[in-house]
Image (cartoon, rainbow, N blue to C red; front, top):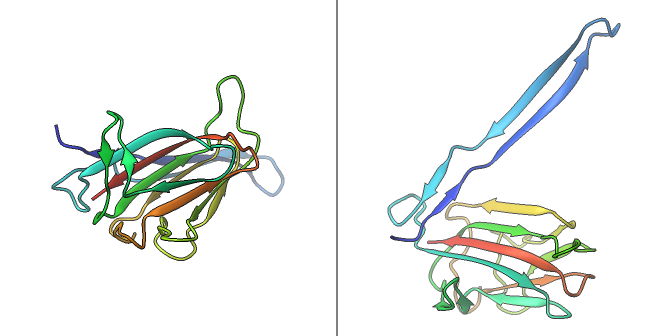
Length: 167
């Protein structure tokens, strides 16, 4: 079976509203839902490689090289020449507790990958925070000068999940 990615996001907000005299109360529901996206080798954008790992900071920053990953089967995975179409990062709870600090995500100082499509590819996820970027054809190709993402935290043994669909 070929590699593929399925992306579905939905946000629903419930707003309590009342008239000026608070005689009538009602609730408005606001919804934002993306279409269910199934990305594969024949989709637009195409996805041919997927990566998903739970990672732990090694008592300091961790730089992930998108040209030298290890897949779920323990095999080498090189995303060179591909764009990260979908990236999901979860500042995951640790077993028996939670990460105690934010997780910083930035392009590496050398060979940095602009994972959000531009020079402002920086984020800090609070403990338990989730970031999903679907940027169809908007990210650069992984290559010698654009391949590394650095993760850091004041919680030096933070655990997080990284998922990438590339094509």
